[in-house]
Image 1 (spheres, rainbow, N blue to C red):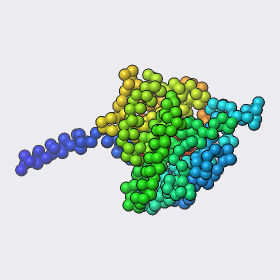
Image 2: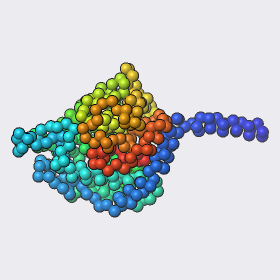
Image 3: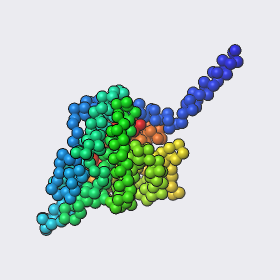
Image 4: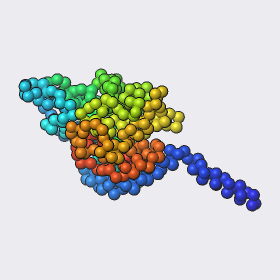
Length: 395
């Protein structure tokens, strides 16, 4: 009897020493998720209370006379294009990094609002388990993806148009990064009995159709081949939407794209992103691209194919990217390049790469820095370039 008890104690000690067979990443996931939950709990419940009062507003609520599309087509205008002083009524000209405040942005605002609503409701559902949050989210999901009178067409043919030049451009595909938290929110809430199968099927069909368009259309193919953050964001979106639709073949193709194209072609051996650093807003663009790459790693990594551990032959890795940029996030005064031409004072905020990186590597400084930064930015440009605002639903 004593021998059996002694043996049992040894087994228990062995289990404790190995973390009950949990991997380090699993233990870190639990820990980081708890930190995020503790920090954001009050904000999430407040945001969800606001979201419960909101009625659906889709692209059909506003239409621009400059749009070549119909009432169901998303339309936006390229941020950095302005009237030509030499030809005020002619084609717009480019001013890189300088946002034209007179552009049509109502569809973009509606989509960001939609993302905020679903992000808040799905986060609150995780915290409380209340189906009331799911039921209200469904009304918004139906309006955007199912209701024939209010839905958005699953393409971006008319995004980031330029007056006198283009009715739409492939670069506009970046606008739908704000549907990622909608897709992830639906994935979180689909476990609820309140989420009816008909609506869920309709939502998944919309995202499957849009994912197909992103892969076979001329703008989608062009965007996939861009060499900077646009290609990263194309991949990030496709990965997010394919995850909702359980499209394993698509997820595999994005993993291959990350390892063979995105990381090796965009990152320098020191962990920086040269194409982003060469822009007129290098600080903001470097942050944005790192957020997107780490989000990709978080979405795509599996036990068999862990992108967090992936390293190119010349030593490039996502961890090196975080280690390069982190010192400038922790202490912005260390930044060695010129300040961004716009919004310099508004970065950084609570960047998702800090959460996802800490979750993957267990670096306490990264999550501690995240805790100290702004979790609810109010500047529109910052919000537009921060697709992951509800980290709890991703953990």
